[in-house]
Length: 274
Image (cartoon, rainbow, N blue to C red; front, side):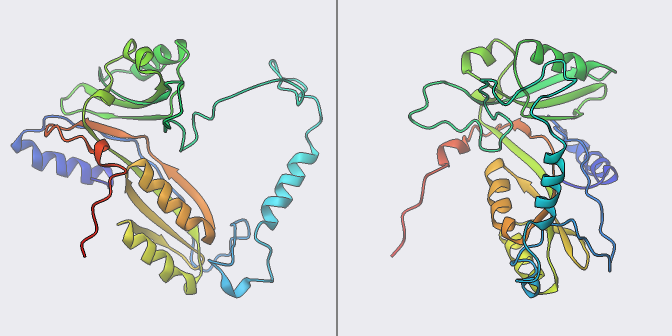
């Protein structure tokens, strides 16, 4: 269920008579509504979203100007930093916050992958800081974090995605990854479009069952719920039109009582009927 807090409370109140077993909620996300008739010179205009401007406006003029201005103020030395990172430093890093991180291939022998963790905690001030502190002190990074009130009063459910090996994560908390679970995420995405290209964007949104939550003269904002692959696929298709802003919640998950594991269905194609 997606919507405002009043809608959430109404749904929960009406379903309570049937008996709510588990409840997982995300926090609130928001994008600014664009005013009608206003121009947006900072948006990334593209030929797909504004075909009538093709040839008159370079695609990344604003971004190149901003990058050049910011780059001119950066010297070769990081002055003032306690732990400066110099260009000649030999530093290696894993992009654990990248959307594609955590997908293992057959040749990957490191054992690292994304683990979905679900924790039921007492609802009192500072509990989130304690939980994240336990994770960070052990050297784990947090890819996704969602916190909300649970099915019982006085309890909160924390759903987080932490990268690591099966052995290391198993020592931390109970791991939902070993159980069949349903996971969802909410995304708000704002695209730069004019009247001519708006229909194309709405057609793409219909395929992904995304809803339009705001429309202006030069932008349209869509709401989408689904798994990570669905978010990535929609974002890739809308990128040629020019993505202005993206806001995403953390991932929420509940164990499947049916025991059906949808991970076995991924990558499986049904035979064609002739």
